[in-house]
Amino acid sequence: MASFELRDFSSDHSMLALNTATLGHNVEGHGAGWSPEQVIDACAERGYGAVTWWRREIGDRAAEIGERTRAAGLEVWGLCRSPFLTGPLAPPDRQSVLDDFHASIDMAAGLGAASLTICVGGVVEGSHSMRESLKQVTSIVAEVAPVAQAANVRLALEPLNPVYGGNRSCLTTVRDAVDMCEAIDHPAVALAIDVYHVWWDLSLASELKRAGAERIVGYHLCDWLADTQDVLLDRGMMGDGVADLRHVRAAVEAAGYDGFCEVEIFSAQNWWKRDPGEVLDTCIERFRNCC
Image (cartoon, rainbow, N blue to C red):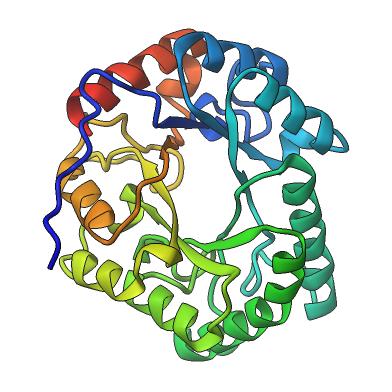
């Protein structure tokens, strides 16, 4: 086995990407309401390497915003997200799901985003079955994978913390996500690994090695607060919680991932209420010292 050395970011944050959820813009009524141009300029000024956008920020400006991002010296690392594919938050029928899924792929392609994040949705209503729900997700993703490949977009399956199993994601472990990738067996289908969702998983390193470098297209940073007040909107800034951040990153990088580290913090009562410049500066400081 080849030797492995964790990347050193203590004096270099050029591999830090901003997911704009960290500024609250992904949820109506939250954040400072910065325009995409303000976000781009602030990130470029501070030496970030990339930005991941949310669909509600992009509207019909995908090509324009993508070009503006790259002109500032930043990469468009990703787009959040596909529709939920199953469960109570998904569109009402399979065709509606597929239509919205195709629209999200088109937007990612227009941006020139490297990947489209997929939060798969919860348990199929009335089924009481994680297994059946995962089968339906697998079927939908397999059907759409050739469309994504034709658009040069990777589909990043993101397993979510088990607390979201009922409504937001029946895909709750990296094990099941790797199994799904293997079942679909398509080059457009890969994984995004988020600290918030996997920090507790002792099988993380072995499952990521099973996935392999080609199937890991995203790594998301935040922290799990020991006394979290809201499992959706109370994520911690890196270093404020209980997650072993370097251990998690070591598992991701030992599997072969060498891409951006994307900070994604949902924090309605704390970080979303602060000046965005302060948030961006804090992310850099914590990335260098805690991650």
